[in-house]
Length: 287
Figure 1 (cartoon, rainbow, N blue to C red):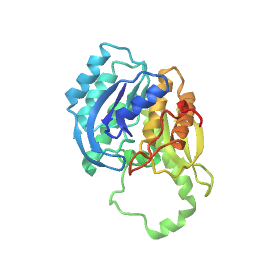
Figure 2: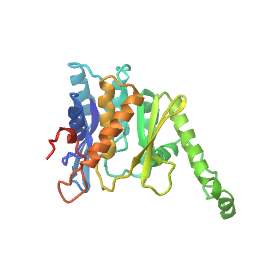
Figure 3: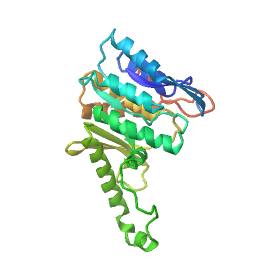
Figure 4: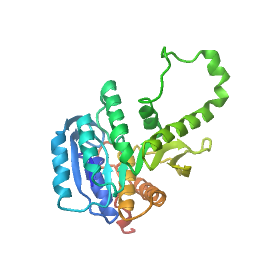
């Protein structure tokens, strides 16, 4: 079951998740949290779905069917987070893949975005089997718990100069600390995308999987030019499908990455916007 936005272009959100689930031999069900107005290039507007409607969509289906896994994608307000968290608390044995930042929802005002991130951290992260987010998104979420400087000022220029050689190590240490904070909340695994691959100038990025014992895997991938829409959602949907089929998190991460790379390598531009991952690429007959 996927919770997320309805994208009329089918590039992100629940339509894209259902396509990935189907491609990976899973039956997908969708609970819509928002209606988008957009195409393959941009989103112009969004309509929230009432939290009670979100809950009712899920509850009615859950009374009828058994779920093998859950994915939570885009949520738009605090009430939705609370409603979804309450539902998921009744299914602690089903894997939960949490990927609330990969959608292309319109940006919220800063205060609303911070409140939403705090609610996700407090209510959904503790229930997650695996939380997936980019290094940038991790930094934004971490701002909801990090202690800020008392005056909010930037470090002095001489301090910046003295510490310039430590920037990379400091960034890695900060990332590790932020991940440990999330794991301490109860999340079993954290997958951070877009981390440094450790190579210089070779066009590679890495996805790093963390667990209770630290780094489990660090997979470098060649950066594809794109531009893409729905790449992150493809990865989290594939993770959900593989875990629904019984894979453990490290195995699911490896398989989902391979699938996503294939979908991006065979992506197509259907209109004037970005390339959309081809989630059924492995069914195509060779020419």
